[in-house]
View 1 (cartoon, helix red, strand yellow):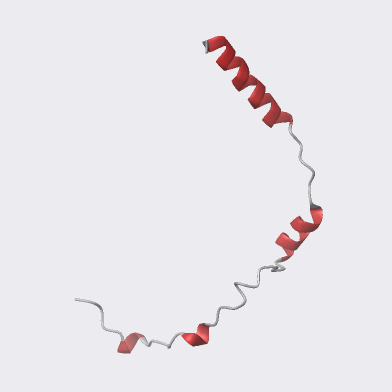
View 2 (tube, one colour; view 1 turned 180 degrees about the vertical axis):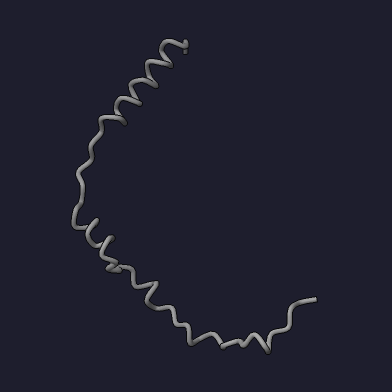
Length: 62
């Protein structure tokens, strides 16, 4: 493919990306900004399942 056709394709793609306006889902944006979590996987994590470690009891590796 010649340089002219290649440049024309790149220009076409760039123009399409520049002027592309997707439909905005404002409800999803509102949920994301308000901090409402729809993912339950993060809520299942429990810190109590790990034992507490005091700095005085911790020995650095040698």
